[in-house]
Every structure is written in structure tokens, then in C-alpha cells.
Image (cartoon, rainbow over all chains, first blue to last red; front, side, top):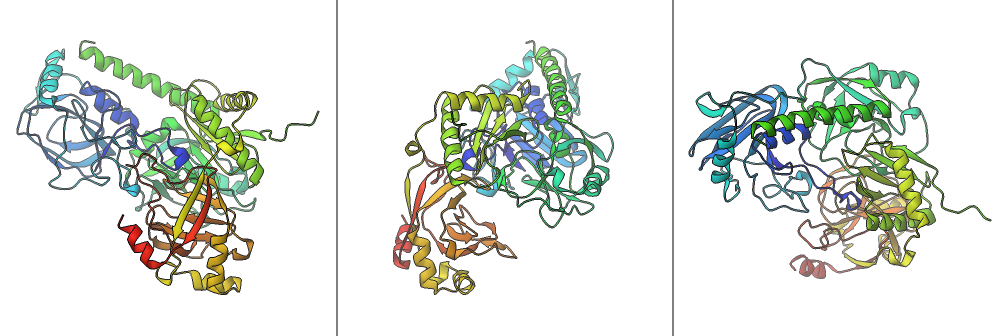
Length: 319
Length: 234
């Protein structure tokens, strides 16, 4: 579990990747549900959740994966001072974001509160959270929480907590596995034999056990590279699928390296990164080959769907 | 009229939100220097919708904002051409001189003997030739502050290690093929380690987080163990 926000941009030329939430739309949703700005920092909870104690009255929301929790999901919840919130394990979707009104008030590093674990900076002391950690909230968080909750139109109690009648639809959860993810041909796709190219798009891949925020290892058929010249080290990006000489593909995720020297088999459509990020180790994925135009359309459509959901939430707040 | 020397070969899509404008598929020092002047100009220009400009060995990548609409490959090409047309900064405005103190003593140089045997030189001579060269930062990537330094003496060329080390200590100076690197923090690495610097290569809390920038001219100054210890405590 780490503190994450939307990430830090404009620093890739010195090797600092944007980072930030693995499932960006889920974070955006959680923030909107508590009336936050899009770049407020939240908790990124992966597979197993924490117990959290709230010393003051706080408006919170869980957005993203379906986790067992002591509060309802995907809606604003006003917690009483002294509440112990319990989040246990995911039922569907590997990552859920806990947003608090006013955001988590840690000092930004290089323009962001996102935690970059390999470099040990950002978030809380550049590390994963552990028992006993205390996270600072906005100095006015109790007042902000009460004020925002009071403006909500359709209040209702759920599971003994003050909440609302409605909930936001989860936009990034798989309804079945293998999850279908769109991928374009990468810069070195042509270096692989047609049989290997087909294997990439035909296989059902499993997210490897040693996958993390830097990259997902894909377990499946080996992908040997036939020939082609030595690949020159060059820029990579979120969703680049690299294939080192061992033949095991790696999808670069939120904390990706900014350059790499391995052949690029494919590039994941940006619209599908969040859905891929919702897979835990052991989850299965199937790649659908698409072109650039389709990827751009998917991105546009996903943005429109998200904008519609955000508008709906702002309306519930009377905006 | 002669064809301009630096023409983009093409624009490659790097996913649907980034594009790589390629000037050379291989490492050509002149083109590398040109690309760095171009990146400097692009950074200053702040093109709308572009979140990151990353100069690489033979081209420059433009990373676009998620709300970008249109053909990003075409946009990248147009932005780059307009930037070149308006004139790029002189080469001397790119990068600065950086001196890096390095201790090459045995404790910090686990692969020095192996390298010496491979290139058939005495270890002291390997050190002398490594420290004698002036290097250039060709590109920064792989990790925060991790610079690829070109200019390694050809007589010191060794391939990457067959088995990467699980943990190369922070500040380790290593070589492979025609380049040298300085590890900004302890990570797994496949280059041959021949020394270590007490200087902090990357510090997220410093005004200038990365010691190195593209185009910097870098020299290594050999120091004794005692100086290493003193510098480490500053």
C-alpha cells in the first residue's frame, strides 16, 4: 500500500517516470466522490487492505476494485471521528483507491505526492505504508468533510455509515477473465517470426508472481526473436511490451523505466492500461491486436465515459 | 543547395500517446549532439499538449497529454520541424563540465581484475585509461539520474556480464562496450564495476536533482580511499 496521486510529469529526460496510480481512472473517481481536485493524493491499496483509524470526522470514498470493507464502495461515506475502517481482500479487481476529502497532505517531491519505491522518494518517506504510520490530512479536513457531505443531494445510511443513495459505476473492472486488452504492434514487432507474432496475440497470458508497479511479467509461450539488428537503447513508455532475450515479455507499468534496450513487441493502448492494472498476479489476459487509430478512438471513448461519470458526481454535489 | 544534414528519418509511434522522431537508428555522435540541442529548444518552447521531451541516442521522444486529440505522430513531426526551422541553441549551450571523483581501489572495484585480464592490461592501466578520457552524456534513462556516458577508450571494451549482479552499490562506476555508467542507487546491474564515487548522483530533494544532464562533458578524477571517506560524510 502506498500513497499515490496522478504522478509527476516533465521529468523523463532525467530518468524520472510519471508514476502515480496504476489505475488512473479509479483514482480520479475516488477523488471526485469526495469532491477533491483530480491531483489530490490517495492510498493505493493492492490485493490486501488495511485497518485505518480516523481521528476526526472524514469524508472518504473507495474507488476501483471490489474489496471487502466495512463501508460501501464507490460512493462518498462520512466517517465519524474515531472510526476504525477495515478493508480486507479483493473480490474482483486488484487495486482500490481510498480518497479522503482534502487529500493526503504529505509534502510533494518533484511536484507530486506519488511514491516512487525504487528511488525511495515521494509519498510517505518513499516507502510502502506499514502498521503504526500516521498520514496527515488537510488541516481543515473535518470542516471540509462535513461541508461537502451536507451539500450532497441524496443522502442515505449504508452499513451504519452516513452515505448516499447512489454509487459510481466501476469503469475498469473485469467482468470475466481472460481480460481483453488492446495492443498495437511495437517498433520491433517485425523482428519476430510470424509464428511468434501470432503466439503473442493468440495466447492467454498470466500475470507473473514477481510483477509489480514497475512492470508485469507475462507467463506464457516463449517469444524468441529471430533476427534484426541490436536494438539501440531508447525511450519507452507506459504499456511498452519488451521482450528480453529470455523470451519472457514484460509490460511496463506505472513506475516504468524511461528508456530500455530490449526489443519492443507491442504497445498497450493507453485506454486499456487501467484494466490491465486491475489484474493481480495469476490473473489472465488476452491481447487484441489493433492499430493506432483504434487505440486513439478507445482513449477518446474512455475519456468521454469518465467525463460523464464525473459530471454525474459533481451534479450530486450540487455543482 | 546541399540537403540539410539533420533530417528526421521518420516518426515512430510509441503507443498512442508518445512518438519518437528518429534521426539515426545507430549511435552517431554528431546526430546525438544535434538531438540534444533540439531537445533543449523543445523544452524551452513548451509545445501545447506535450508533457515530456526525452532526447535519446539518435532521436527524441515526445510524450503527449492524455487528452490530446489528433494524429500524435504527425503532431510530433510538425513540432520538431517547426522547432528546427526557428533555430536551435549552439552546441556550447548544451550541457556543462562535470568532474566526478572516483575511488578505484579494490574494495570498490570488484570487476577490475577481471576486466584487466580480458583486455590484457594491468589493472592500474585500466584505471589510468578510464580516468584519462573525457566523456559525454549521450542520454539519461533507465533510472533517475542514470546517464549513459560515451567516450570509453576502445581498448577497455568488454561485453556486459553474462549474469547481472543482484545489487550494485550506489555510486558504482561501471563499463560495458563503449560506454561507462554511474549507478544512481543500488540496483541490479550487468556492467563491470571498476570504481565508486562518494558523490550523490540523484537526489530528489536537491535543487538540481540529477547530477548529469544530456550533453554534459564528464571527467573522472581518481581519489584515494581516505578522500572517499571524507567526501562520503559531507
